[in-house]
Amino acid sequence: MSLRVLVTNDDGIAAPGIQALAWAAAQRGLDVVVAAPLEEASGTSAAMSAVERDGRVVVHDHPLADLPGVPAYGVGGSPGFITLIALHGAFGPPPSVVLSGINRGANAGRAVLHSGTVGAAFTAATNGCRAMAVSLDMLSAGEATAASGGAAVDAAARVRDVERHWATAARVALDLLPRLTAGPPESVLNVNAPDLPHGRLRGVRRGSLASFGQVQMTVAESGHGFVRTSLEEPGQAAQPGTDVALLAGGYASVTAIRAVTEVADVDLSGLDQEP
Image (cartoon, rainbow, N blue to C red; front, side, top):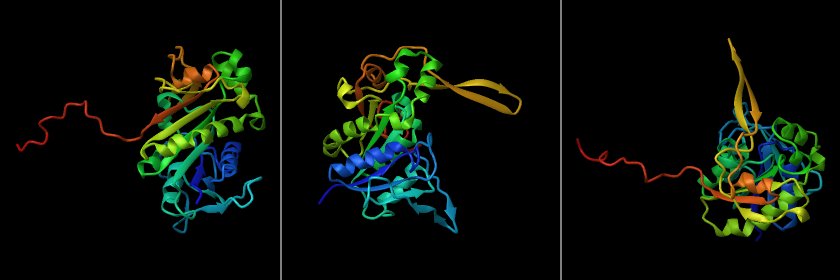
């Protein structure tokens, strides 16, 4: 029996990345079901939000091109919510693995906390299902490499989605699947690949989480009754060996992460004693 896999994302059911990931999984002989938000749900982390009509969550059949026979659904809900109901049998037999992505843009550094792509994977892992978050970097390769500051973001935006190397990220992810299935269920593999042809990758490396993401939110302007935010690249260089640095060097990065865990290095002694 082939491995049952849910493919989801936070860019929406119509995004090109999810089709590339689902296609790659189906080509490996996996039992694939696709369920993703009807609309973009970026930045939702592991939110449990849904759109209901008459007390029922909205679900539409959404067949994907080049994937005949693969059931696919657009759902009025956040990626975390979709993952949770999939684990409870909403789209057929519960999956053994969740593949979330391919996100349009890297999910790197500690900023992964806010990602809906990673949030779906965290939700799966918290519920005992192995999961991988997959993203395609838009800033460290191609025409953006020669740019700096906000110009890098602008240069990346000029490349059309159909010209992106989604297949590179999908291939890297599926090649890592045996490592995921051999690991503990509560762990997540966070995978980022440069927007390059697979043959131009310098390799796949284990990357530590950078202390920041590729971009950071700043408050550009505030006034009476409003705040305007913007995204800009951090002013400091990424530390060697981090996911951000590896992407900039032309490597795909993989990081093993966990969602909610207890820590033992905070002094809470004496709190269990009777008064």
